Length: 327
Image (cartoon, rainbow, N blue to C red; front, top):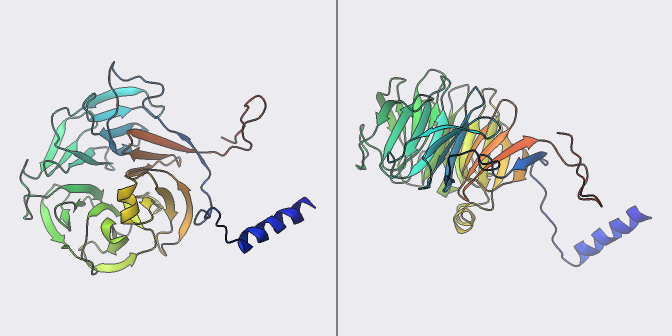
């Protein structure tokens, strides 16, 4: 009787033209969240707090690196897997903090889209490599114009999406020598409007978030266009695991992303071959990193690091506000 009544209500809603919640594409990703990783509990030095968190990444040891735009703490802060402060560096080094990645050797790379530079550090903050000319925007072999992200091929070569001022991807040797670049401003294939993120799969294919064109373009290692995905919206950031699991933090379209200031985003897991969405869930965010243990770290311009971890509540608040989960 109850089931029949529910069906009647559903049919009535359709008849009245009432819209319901849109389902999660590919099915719901069943995760729980710590919305203030690194700040609850707060173990940072007294008076420190995050500004806008632009990026986050974790290394093979489980340490978590946070890149943020605040004045009350060093811009690059390292925590253990549970959010305990370990070390930090970088005060006064950057014009505007943007991208952060950890390479397979454990080195820490960041993009500074304010001073047009890319930095490589060891895990303790020692500077190993610097690309670009501080304060000088350009499109030649020596300069960038507001670079956004870095990605590493298994060969050791790496790519920089040069992305707010320029509309190109730049490829370097593992030693940091310029090899080639491709892309220009536009809407055709091989052209970009804000290449905001870049990632590489095990085959050496290069995935470029062409954010303001609401697509991801996929190229070979030399920039030759292979295909594009136009169904994922305005993708902020792409992360590809060693097993070619593709994860994105994305928004319905570029106008919604900008209007809501990244607040109305979704995390999606995507099939590497077909682009099919395998699962999704809501989350604001600007940057995504997925650990081997399937924890998802999101850097949010709200000033938060979200730590999503597998688990799902089996019931809501009860008389004693008791919660039970399978985590």
